[in-house]
Image (tube, rainbow, N blue to C red):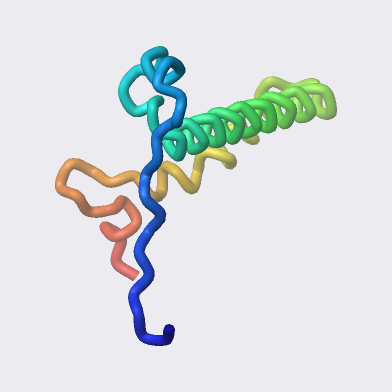
Length: 96
């Protein structure tokens, strides 16, 4: 029906009680296991992409400095958005 707020799906556990005893903490929850596996695969893919990019830059240029430049450019957005200890971003300190 229109106007009703839908509820999020409930967290479920495995139906097999013998299998549940083998899982520790949050890994007993099906949705968390799916999330964890998905994040692990995503992180592996990101790591593999960074490694392949570094090897490609090194192979194409043959210069270690080009590898450093490519890594610095790749990390630049992260460093521009890092928060300092007073919780203001580095980019917000510049008048402009």
